[in-house]
Length: 305
Image 1: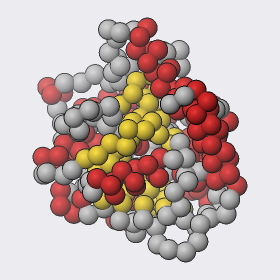
Image 2 (image 1 turned 180 degrees about the vertical axis):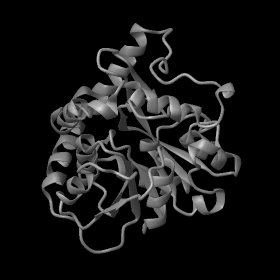
Image 3 (image 1 turned 90 degrees about the horizontal axis):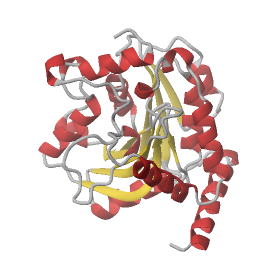
Image 4 (image 1 turned 90 degrees about the vertical axis):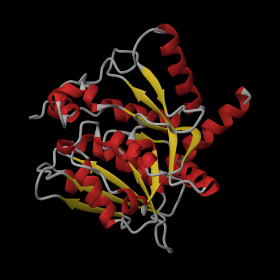
């Protein structure tokens, strides 16, 4: 892609994001994609995630925001968007991770396809368009995008996840990069409670689907941006949202945003060629028992394990 073409593409993305936030909700036709956001007492970032969904160029979506027994103003934040495509459900009992809220969202879903967005993550406006097209073209059970995993402030860490030239063969993919057929959970089962498994719940679900013969396809587009709360100490205590606000601002206004982010990720790896991109993530081993990763992540976030 030439520099001029990249600039035109980036400008188009910025215009799409700005226009989508101003346009009225789409009418007519049931949703094809049900987006699920699991959230817990961090309404400051939830607001940006919802904006990210509403900015999608793909029109046939609904959004189900599932609170994990939230006690803050998250419900009011959801209601403030006055968008009939968005529904709120608050669990009566706290599950402690995204697994059970995600299952609640799937149970409420009307779409044939399910996509996830972390409440502290963001999408570019073409995210759903590209994933729906990828899933349809490949006839895949699961479609996934490239995603940029952004380390804590000052770390300089930027890692591209999802680059799997030979297709998905196991390991981690950020949930915010995923879209799958809703009936997949009917055949392989839904998200499992972290206290019952040794792997992180998202990895366990994907590897279970892979083992059951599910097909995967990558969009090869960088459209998901993950800012892991488990890499940001006391993130659920401080409840900061400056990173999401700045990322959204750049996404909406900066020409060739995705190309620039790819370049930043490449530069990050070039400066630290031997550095492990997971060095900021909680470190656990099989000997730590079931649910160890989620418990360690909760401690980093400032939550009771």
